[in-house]
Length: 197
Image (cartoon, rainbow, N blue to C red; front, side, top):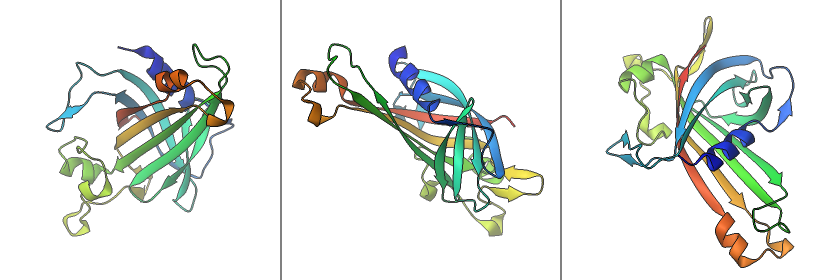
C-alpha cells in the first residue's frame, strides 16, 4: 500500500478552521474507509488499491443546506442537497520533491450520499455502485425516506461516495515540464462510512 497519497489526503482532511463544533444540527459521526481500488461488478477489488481509514462528523446549519465536515478538531464547509454532502477544500504547499522552485496546491473534494435507515435497508446494507441521487431509493409511499431530522436526532446510518485529491502546479511559476508530468495527478478514493454515533 502506498501511504504517501493516503497521508496527503488525511493531512488535507485535517486542514481548515479550528473551533468548537459548528452548526445547529448533528448529522452523525462516521467511521470511514477509503480505497483507490477499482470496483468490479459493484464489489470492491482491494488487491491493487491504496486504502486508509478516518473518522468525520457532519454538522448542518438550521437551513439544512449549509454545513460543516469536522475532522478531529478542524472543520470545513459543505453543502447538503437533501441526499448528498459535498465539501471542496484547497491547501497550498511550498515544495514538490525534485522541483523546489515550484509551489503546489492540493484540491480535495469529499462527496458522499447519506443513507437513511430505510434507504440502507432497501439497498441491502450496501453502498450502490454509483452513489448518485438517481441510484438511491426514495419512496415515501413504501416508507423509504431520505436522510432528515427526526425526533431525537438525524436519520442517517451510512455514507457512500468519493474523496478526490488533485495535485496542481501553477503555470505562472515556470515549473519545469518534467516536474509537472511527475507531480500533477488526481487520485480517486471510493469512500464508505458507517455511523458510530
